[in-house]
Amino acid sequence: MLEQLTERLARIAKQMRGQTRLTEANTQDMLREVRLALLEADVALPVVRDFIARVRERALGQDVLGSLTPGQALVGVVHKELARLMGADLPAAQRELVLAVQPPAVVLLAGLQGAGKTTTCGKLARMLITERKKKVLTVSTDVYRPAAIEQLRTVSGAAGAEFFAADASMSPLSIARDALVYARRHYFDVLLVDSAGRTSIDEPMMQEIAQLHAELAPVETLFVVDAMLGQDAVNTATAFASRLPLTGIVLTKLDGDARGGAALSVSHATGKPIKFAGVGEKLTGLERLDPERMAGRVLGMGDIVALVEDVHKAIDVDAAERLAHRIRSGARFDLNDFREQVIQMRRMGGVGNLLDKLPAQFAKAAGPLDSGQADRQVRRLEGIINSMTAQERTRPELIKASRKRRIAAGSGVPVQEVNRLLAQFEQMQAMMKQMQKGGVGKMMRALGAMSGAARGLPGGPRK
Image: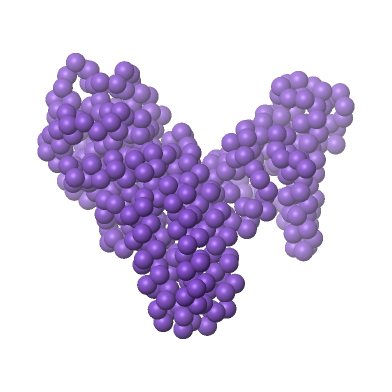
């Protein structure tokens, strides 16, 4: 997400850090570059003006000019102001999803048609069930869009939430009332209400959502907005905020917009925190948006905390400990172990998700990479290994020409891709041997060799 902006700002931040002395002239030059980067990322002009004015005021003050490392101090100012744009100055309690009320806690989702409300409803249900152990009921009041109710039924089932079935001939208000009564009678902790959207803002839509809000008295009213709308995201958010007492914002499709200016504009324009960011179509693709950490990602600093959280959620700790014990005891790393590493990477959201949270210099070291293509290759690697026999996975040296042809046919790939997988496996196996010997320096060199080999991934970039 935010690839273009991150690339520009990371380069500018590096230039800032290199400055041993800041003058008004070189500060102005750098701020001009920051301004252009923000405008190119589709950040709203009023937001950019306010941001640059605040950075300039602090940059030319004693905090920066009097610092022993003024360039680094200026990066710190930019980082802090970016975080402020996304709601860092709002109370921490406002940035969390508040459910501390008499059950059921009602959460109302509002937004335009196509913003991703229904998918977000499913993702939020899953998060509440798995992380906060809540009993969740979902309901759709969208009686206008074909199959909207069935779509929510499907995603609710996949998320593990109960779905309140309603007749599309009923009014949205009647459906909402019935769902609330049902949630109370059956002791649900949370009721998620997916409201109807329109292709554009209109008065009937605003009246309907306002009536729903008045009837349900939700503890949370979340505005769901497509990050790819750019400038229009701000206009839409402002219109909804003027008619509804919003408590937060959910930015969807943030991974689909290389510019991502909406992420830096919507919170500032509405005065409401961005509580979640939606990435990808999977039900696991919902992240809490921490302004400080997001600002670090925008500046190319990465988000190691989020990466560690992903690891904790996705990694099978027992399996990882068993592998570590086997390697320490001298056991050979085989293709079963390699497949497990591939599966763990897929569970963590794939290559794109990993690179997005690494600092810019590490992500850049991976070379130009189409994350979607890379993720498809990860699944293909798993398919190739699954086409091997148990004996072949345990003893890869048995895989000669005839076996390679059979494995290639079974997984639907050319023989060359089987050869590439085996080459990657050998690289990983060599690295594990270095770990057994405690040769960290050698292991790092092996990692360097692997990054070079990664350019030979099927479908990946080649020189």
